Length: 186
Image (cartoon, rainbow, N blue to C red; front, side):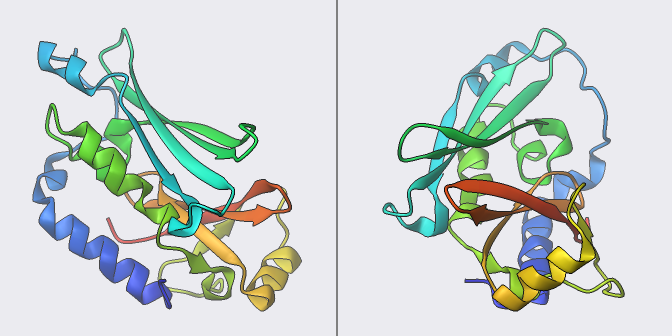
């Protein structure tokens, strides 16, 4: 379990050092996909919330190759009844851990990306407004709700959603709620 925001940031910085080619990346559409990109299409990875098979919630990532040459990953959180509780599509060239994958290595990148759901943080570690790497509440989430989440210290999964940010989610009843975006150095 990640115990402090600095531990989260240190982990992400270490990943950045391992994958140095990211410095050459530029956000935006990729040129047409080379023929080898087809190996990165229709891949599936899954990870249970908190690395607990009995948690009742599994993160699934599926890659789809578009006609525009870009690969997109659909992240779905599915409960034990098969109901989708959260879903979002991410262009892989705009997500730090996925953008670094060499052709044919997206399956390993998806597994690494879903690691957020096996290494949970708590809402007690949501940084304040004056933090070096701030947290921005999701649309419709108030400052009072963020303060309450900090006090409750609930399990929170923050998955890399860009080149310098992570999308943070908490379980709420049988569902999942997006609580905000946490910035980190890219």
